[in-house]
Image (cartoon, rainbow, N blue to C red; front, side, top):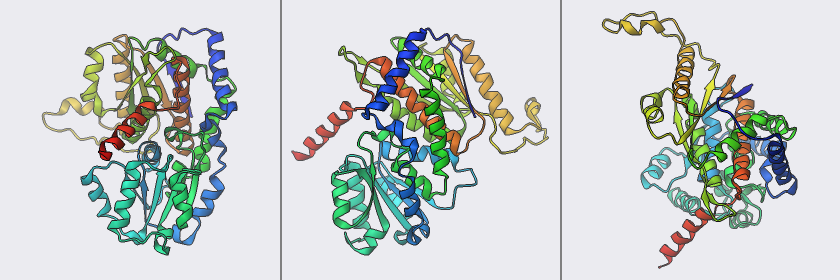
Length: 414
């Protein structure tokens, strides 16, 4: 389903590989880090029951009100899978940024009676989310607590949070995020599974892919994954940047999710008081062959590169046998499929990067479907946990983000 190949020499001993497996196993067994347990799918039955309600089945638009980990994972999975047969006709909308132009552009296309609003905040008091909620309620003149309110809003939050208490007070259906699951690791909780199920995706298959890589890892069968994390961290003093070069436009939102996952998880002060981390950059092939590739080839040698390649796009679009006057030099591609072209470009680009002595690894996906996407999401969550372990940091907190929130509150209190 998914193959991985490292084009660099991972210098890590067998004993250090074993220690990394054991470190993440201890995290899982301690119950301090809950994302490891999410592939068990304990929330699935509640989601299934909710989605079968008549008033829910008739919904035409799903509006996710959330930011960061509350939205990026859902957007990533939907973008990767929207070409598949399981995706229904429901429109997925997001209220994320507090950019007034964006808010206006989204809300003007909403018919309230056709829309289910999913309010997501782990803390239950995210300022962007609560501000959007207030604006939507006012815009549509909704009375809090009435039937219209209860039938068109659902919440996802921590048990006991302010949003949970609000939901209980006013009769809203509320799904709970496990307390030991951070927002950026929450895509396999109700945060991602509820909207994805409403869109028609087989969430059990998504979880099956996540469980496959998780179980394989804890059976100690994923040495290349450990080797890759160790290489990134052991070379981070002079190779601090990882470029995710994804050869499919469908990966654009996945790249955004990866940037948050790595940035927020790995940019930390370690136990020795040192600022450390790995800087994530997500780009798309073949588009960025005409922009960022120049920097990779002739720019500073401070990057590692991960190539993602989809072997079968399940689309048989061919370049016609047409010869255009003065453009005959491009005729060599006539008769070939676009699938062949983009993968040949991926191979050629990867070789050009390798020829410069740059560290590269390849993730090759047979095709995009629920199971492979679940696998990929969990693969990157494991990779992040491994990098955090090797960096000697707390992968799961975000003190820098909390500092900014505190300063914002103080600013408006003046």
